[in-house]
Length: 138
Image: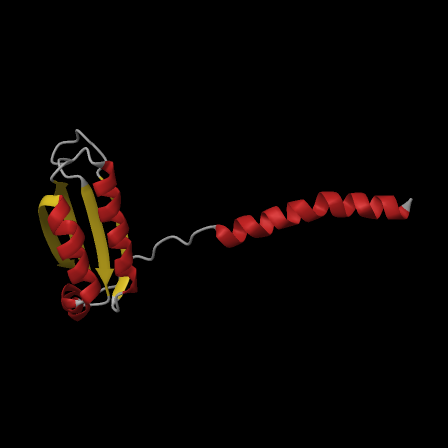
């Protein structure tokens, strides 16, 4: 009798325990707010062929490689979220936001071979235009 109860308890409790442990260990941490003196680099890109989903995906995936560049704190990238709000521009195809420790890290990133390769082999061939915006976080 005790053995059956113990087996049932294990069969019910163990999966629940594993579910709770798995859910808590896989929850992503919210991104940290940029620190004072850090730098944010924003890039908006217009693709040569906006309907080319493979090109969009290729550009987004190339951007994820920037996370390994020293001085890069965070990288966020994705496709435009269409809007009709006043003073909003949703004419671009892909947006990129990269946070750096400081202005020196941004300058090093611009010269980094990973960034240079992505611009030469992915961004320049796929985009008809792009604009960058840099600002310090205060």
